[in-house]
Amino acid sequence: MWGSNYYTEHPTIDFKDVTAMLNFDMVGRLNPESKLAINGVGTSPGWPDLIKSSNTFGFDITSSESGIGPSDHSSFYVMDMPVLHFFSGSHEDYHKPSDDVDKINSAGMVRIANLVVAMISGMNNKEKMQFTKTKDADPSSSPKLEVTLGVLPDYLYDGAGLRLDGVRDGKPAQIAGMKKGDIITHMAGKDIKDIYAYMAVLGTFHKGDKIKVTALRGGKEMEFDISF
Image (cartoon, rainbow, N blue to C red; front, top):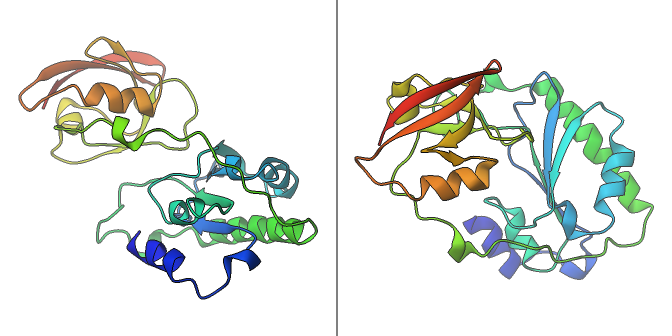
């Protein structure tokens, strides 16, 4: 986020004239269920109704309130600006040479663009978006991870547990036999209700530890032996 941090300190437009910052990271892999995450809806009281009224394109939207996240919108949020972060989901090609143009869902990107155009039209018909601070986690409370399971969380999943959007070759989860779509419910006997519980529990393990992970696959409970 070096670029966005620099820009907020050296803006080329007076921020008094800016209504909001919209961040598209990443929106190229819209899935067949049309699931779309929109983060930052708590940064303005006008966002929820605007998103709902603009969504005439059949998106299954998952939202979160926080204006803080691992992307460029955070730099603008700390400048007291309403922000939104659009995200169509993670994928196994992330940060790999295989993440190429042939994998892009162009039609999905057009649909997302049409949603945003509708939202911007709605903003133009309103007074300037009001900014509100959100309740954000203390960064110092985030666990320091010594080990990794080697999984890609499904950030669009809003059910109980942690659903996997992918597993990395040669990492503990893949070696143990875990697969994309598995839903982790317990690690070393501890409940995994969501990604935050997962991160907190993962932060308690060390290299050389051996644990059991319980997960659902097709509704069937399975147990995996994990070696870190």
